[in-house]
Length: 380
Image 1: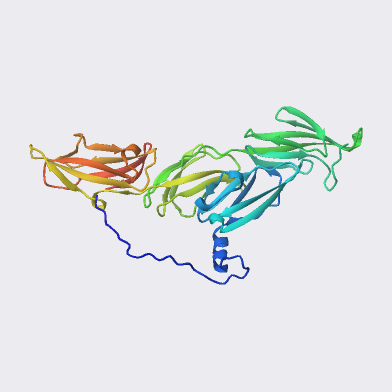
Image 2: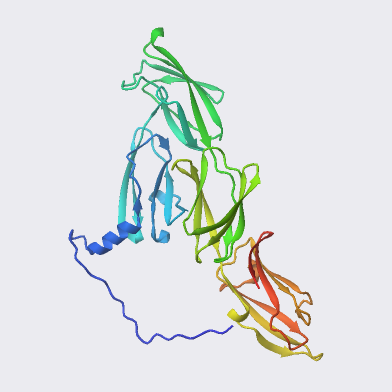
């Protein structure tokens, strides 16, 4: 492979200054830019669900810090989300730090109870928890109020002013039978009700690898009712095919190298259920690297070497070369050759060796990239 040498004769580091209206040591234009590119969406002061999902935008996710080492998830469109556990009866406070402290945004969230007497239907994610109680709307629950529930085949009884914390770990539609009695022995104040609680779970979805400029098939399994797919706007969709049983095949491509994301979320702009990385890679060989003579053999044939360079090489991806002209093979004597992740060095380089018996043609091959057994790019 041929490299060009670059020598820096001088390097000067500049610092852009500007008006600092609030005296915090950061120019106002820098603060404004940080706020435009990073932040928390729709600050949430109260949540009926724990963990609460906080969403926002981010320019450089690697420079972002979450409280208590919380698990950062990236989603479509340079966005992020995190699920933060809440504490019953207390406000949870935390800071989200962007760009190594260049911007800090604070959030305070109170976990509030769910009044089943005023709820008809509730949609949750698998693993969500609620503080369950019951009381007439507008009234303060009392210790003398009794709440009886039948939930997932189990019976529960508790006082109205002492909500029951319950985690929903089964993805299904649950019918919750409620009996509420206001005050001891006051049968005339007894109310019965059935509440539907739908618990959603995202299906397993392949994280596809895309080569910019090449459309590839991506099969999405049937989604549960109430779950929808959202794609990064920079993911190109070249067509959709109904595969039956609710499954869909998308033909997708990315606009440029770099990670993109899709996600599955509760329909209608609800919480994100899972994030799907749309991985990326580029490949260079032949005229984009080099094809060079290596040595002659006594029988008149000779060896030619060709570097293959990838930007990323994923464990589930292979690079296939097929020779389509006579008079040339790989050094194995075959006309087909596969490269896997272990064949590339830390710089993403591998070397292919051809044996040629004539002078016509160059490398005389086609290159394909596969994810599993699905071809995702073809280079003629």
